Length: 490
Image (cartoon, one colour):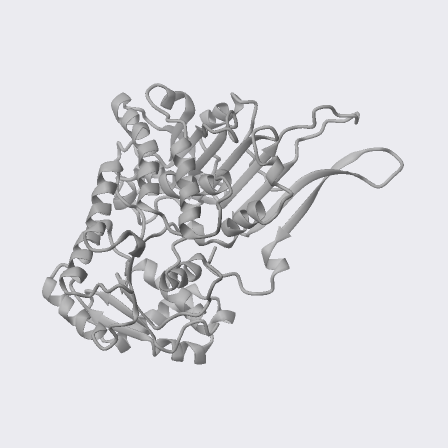
């Protein structure tokens, strides 16, 4: 949620390390194009793309346009706007492992020492420390500089602390922007607006009225093209440690004293530190580890994970995780938070379901499901409240009805992609939507015992057919609390 003090941007240089990579081409450069099209970028704003490829700026721009036309809808691509946008682009072939090459970047930045500088590390995490060292030794870090980096931030607490220490050797904490792009999604920010901008839900947002919460991030894709990374990472590190826990903390956090970044992040950290540890044998009863076998997704035959190119045929890497999490606080004591994420699922879906408790006594001679709040982040962005009302006719018969907000229907403006908001917030210097190092540490402190138990007990993943909602054990996990996964969006 952007700080509304000022929407104007100061002159800036956005330096994209990994400028020819997939993230830059697919998300970052199109995001800045949209902000340029909306006239939100100052004339004195450059995008400097860094990579090893020996290209001229003209050649890079041609490559960028080919990619952009495949990622931007034709109706949103405006030729004249694109031409003026490309005037902002500068490309520099630089080997980021060679300190002498940072002199080239210094020459590009030298004419504008007072500009905001955002160093965006769209590279492998193994290069984070080297880049920070490079820009520091070249004297490129000013009081107006920031550094942005993508997940994964380490493989465990120890490596995350090491990366953060390396960052701290070059940048102050106020200059570091750790990205979880889910926090830039419109619906996630509307979750905060829903909770803290309306008095309606606050009296109900607690253990006395909520029976359970479900958070699902389902992907239709398998491991396509990412086996080298994924087989050494798995769903717990790749999705739970960041995306799922970030959604949980925003859902469960106490009202901050203000929308100031420090106030919001303080409340998020409190939730992470209130998570009940899952250790030892509790890992076996509260967590389901799964891996997809062959099956059918959207009518297409899918190979088993272990048969995918680049995957160890004996791999125990999990492609699915379901967790029963608990928050030890007065507000949430006894309310289970069920988290699940998986690959090769029947559909792509990111969704939060808040199930309220049933009415204490029904006066109607009919079964009634509890009220339910559904917050869907993708593929479409929708908030829906399911209630009961009397249907038409002379009988007192209740039927479920929905009070819903469809962002595409309600708001005429094009839906911003998450990176548009995040990139502008970096330039503004607003850290609300970014993770503090203490958040990262608290998340790993909760995750590490799970990974360690899996390793110590050699817990093999339970198999599930591609195109299904995961292992049968995940249904048993949630059924122990009298609950069931909400798999139909009605």
